[in-house]
Amino acid sequence: MGMAGEAEEHPPIRVLLVDDHRVVRSGISAYLKLIADMEVVGDAADGRKALDRIAELESGESVPDVVLMDMVMPVMDGIAATREIKSRWPAIEVVVMTSFVEEAMVRDALEAGAAGYLLKDADADEVAEAIRFALAGQMHLDPSVARLLADSVRRPRPASADLTPREREVLGLVAQGASNRQIAETLVVSERTARTHVSAILGKLGLASRTQAALWAVREGLLPDPDKGH
Image (cartoon, rainbow, N blue to C red; front, side):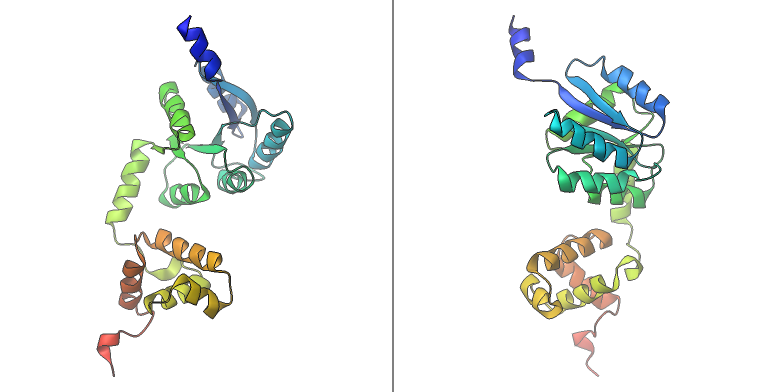
């Protein structure tokens, strides 16, 4: 009887499947149905349809808890869809599923708010574990993805080519010791926007602090080195 009581206390995790291949959707759906604490509440063939489907489910008060999201799809890809979902429905967790591991895509997915990154050859148990992890606020990465991210942190990041002109400007101010408030005043933006720029810069450069960013900027010649007065 205890088991029945527990099942009532914990409703199944509602999962939405998003993939442009019907065979992939039906395959994943088939094995999630075998897992007691999961329920597939719908599927969609691209990111745009996924957003429409979530809105429909919301009106029926059965918003998914977790979205299993393909990366490469027509109309709207998985990264754009993940970003939009996290913006409109912050409580929904997104676990990305893809056929290949590529550093830029992994970073983009995680920056967009994905709570897990799986390869499509993952077995049912691993998919279920990633869904449960996401719901518990933890991240689940395929081992090859975790290795890739660890390697990229150890590798020196490329120079500032991937920073936008505005981010280079913000980095220059950080290197001069400016606070978020001072950056906001200088660039006539909100303090929140300044903070977002600083976070984006640290993320792109793989750095952990403003101090590291300042040293990086000096090393890259983004502002004069105070020790080399001419």
